[in-house]
Amino acid sequence: MPWPVFKPFQGFACHGAFCGPGRRWRWCWGLAACAAPPIPYDRQGAGGVQTIGVLTPYMSEQATVFVWGSPGRMFGLVGALAEAAAQSAREGRVKGALDSRQFQARPVFEEALGAALTTQGYRVVPVTVARSGRDFLDRYSGLPEGPEAWLDCFFVDWGYFAAAGGDDTPYRPYLNVTCRLVRAKDGAVLMRDRVIYNWFFNRDPPMSVVTLPPDPQFSFRTSDDLVAEPDRAVAGLVAALRAAAGAVGTVLK
Image (cartoon, rainbow, N blue to C red; front, side):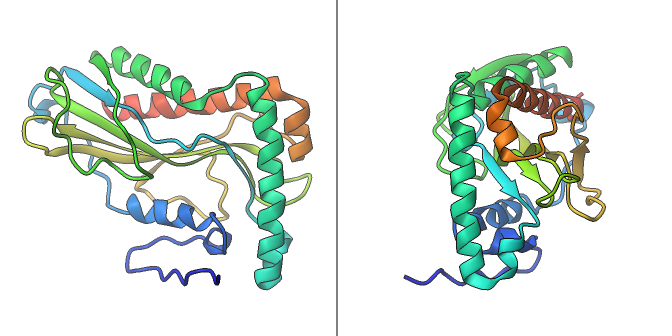
């Protein structure tokens, strides 16, 4: 069965190799989902939000382990398929390493996000919701009473990314998360922003994105090094998740 033709529409951000065959096209879709301009938060004008219901964020269960400038993608469909197979093998090995330390990304982010909001003076209410994919919830009806606003976040991707295959472009933690704050009483969007930890593209980030530099102590020359050092690999992801959560808290201060 041939791969579907995916045509970017106006305002769509498509980044090279991510638009090739295989599941990597979903990353492009995720960028389209968060292509709307940011909405800065006005705490005084938000209507007295004191309690925030933090909805279960969407995150893939498995970390992505990706080489952005892989030479394989330069050789058409065959090269892209070969690289997709290599990526799947990398991710399987890294998953095994993270599983050996019982690492789960979502609880780390949720705990750090709750702490960041509490630091900003909010009362935090965790709210469990079912997520169907990389996007905001369609509606906020049927949620528990009490919070004045809902914080809705989804991860486009998370894991370890390398800008290219080489010693000078090591694997580092990477996160791409988009959040919005929705007022409970009328559904008004009070804040919308995107946080990227480890902007590794060879151009300046757009002004609409909050970017966070990666911690240099969590760099791995190869994916085999990631597998060989699971404790440090986990620590790098924890640092990235906590930094991203802290950035969301700062946006809402």
